[in-house]
Each structure stands twice: as C-alpha cells, then as structure tokens.
Amino acid sequence: MSIPNTLVVIPVFNKQATIERAIKSVLEQTVVCDLLVIDDGSTDYSASVIEKINNPRLTYISQPNHGVSFTRNRGIKTALKKGYKYVAFLDADDYWLDNHMEQIEQLIEKFPEASVFANNYHLKIGESRWNRTKFSNLEDQESQIIVKPFFKANYLNSILSSSSYCMRLTGNDPIYYNEELTHTEDTDFLIKVGLTKTVAFNNKATVIIDKQADNRSDATHILQRTVTNFCQYEEKHPNIEGLKKYLDINRFSIAVNYRMYGLIERAVYYQRKIDLDNLTYKQQQLLNMSRLQLKTLHKTKKILEVIGLDLRTG
Image (cartoon, rainbow, N blue to C red; front, side):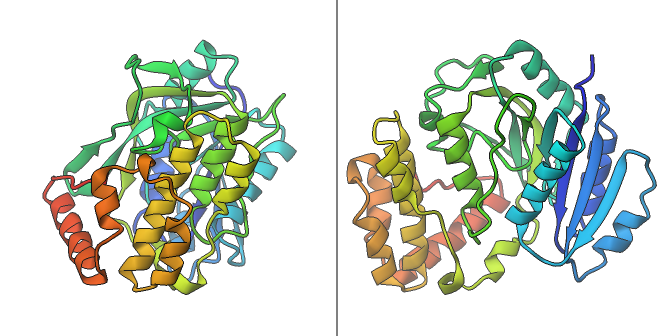
C-alpha cells in the first residue's frame, strides 16, 4: 500500500547547486508522492534548473521573497486545499535515500495514534563523510518507536529535521511555522509539535542533511535576527517533562552566539533565564569564555567536522 495523497514540499532560495539533487531524490522514491517546489524569490539560476525537470508529479510555483516559514506554511495550506492527507518537507540543500517515504509509510501503518512521523538522518560533512546522528534519552533503541517523553529525546540533536518528517493533515490540526522568526523557526516548530502531537520515530537514517551547503540564515546580521520567545512556552507549560531543560539548552546556544559577537548584554539576558543544572560542565564553561576563545573554538569545531571528528559543546 502506498501512502495516500502525500504532498512533498521543497522551499527554494538560491539553491541552484543542490535543488536538482533534492527534486530527483523525491521523484525516485519507492513510494509514489506528489511534489511541490516553491521558489521563494531566488536571484540565482534555481528557476532554470527546476524548469528543465519534466515530470507530471512535479508542480513548480514562484513567489516574492517571504522567508522559509511563510513558504513552508504555503505548502501546508496548499496540501490542505487540494485534499492531501499528508504533507512532507525537504530542504533544497538536502536529499532523501530512495526508501525514505517507504519507511514513513511503515510508521504511519504501525502507529495510527501518531500525527507526526520522522526518520533519522545523517549529517554530511564532506564529499564522502557522514556523521551518525545520536539522540538523548532514547532508552528504547528499536527502529520504530513513539517518542516519549518527547523533549528529553531532543537535548543532543533534534528528533525532527525540516527534511525528515511527515505530518498528518486529515483529522488533525496542522502545526504552522512562526513567520515572524528569522531564526529558530525549526526549534519553535518542534516545541509546538512536542506540546500537542504524538510523534512516531524511525531510528533508521533515510535523509542526508548537507552541512556543506551555504547557510542562508547566516546572511542576516545578528542584531536583525528574531528568535523564539522561549518564556511563552515555559510559563504556559511548566510541568511538561524535559521542556525546561530543552528551552535552557537553546537559550545557552543563543547566549554563546551573542558572546561570540561581543554582545554581552544580550547574552546575559538569556543566561539569567537558564537553570545551570540543566547545562553540562562544559556548557557552563563556554558561557564564561571570551569572544576570542569562543571564535577559536568555533573555528576548531568546523575543522574537526571536515576531517570527521565531532567536537560537541555538550
């Protein structure tokens, strides 16, 4: 049985080097699904690459630049309007192995109580190097599980990648992305899913996240970035297991980033909201480092990733 009426959405912004690979990885799935590619105001040759691909299951539309959250939401709304039962996403940098949707189908059949389904993913750090993705507090290492408590599984890496999940639309209120955010929109989406949905997860990796690709979000100056208001979730849901620690780990990441740019006041704003017991000793040490020390460590981490060694901040 094939997944009934699934629409895959690929948002595109200046990805001429990788968009064809992403599209082909969807069209070559062992499970047939439709594909919607939304060009979010690209200024490179992405449109020319897409238009050369002739396949009846591929629909291509373009729009003025609105950002990735707006574009993903447009994909969700299109899927609902056209009567699809599921929507899945793939970033234009990344690609699927040919059994990705087949594995998603197995999750749907095995866990009918779930409304969000995700496979594991590999992080591509070199032409022929991948990092195996590990997750926190997953005591049950079976290949297919319901993730609970959800937030405790996300301390190390995110169970949901923007290229690895599929969401049920029928009989379910879909989660939308916060279009006001320039950064942490994926984190915000994950929090909302964790608070309201049942998530089924397959520990078998079927997605390649290309860490070598250009990061569009880095082009936004740090003082112009808008991130999630974590307090809104902490205040509304104080008793959700693992949520406070998950929020603090994300606050830590933002604080370190501000410190790296010498924006100490902004860093301290986030640090004051962190329960230090939720951080490792190494993370606590990073919050006391100078800008120069953090920049040196950040550069070292990138070098180690290229040669296949992972220097974790946790």
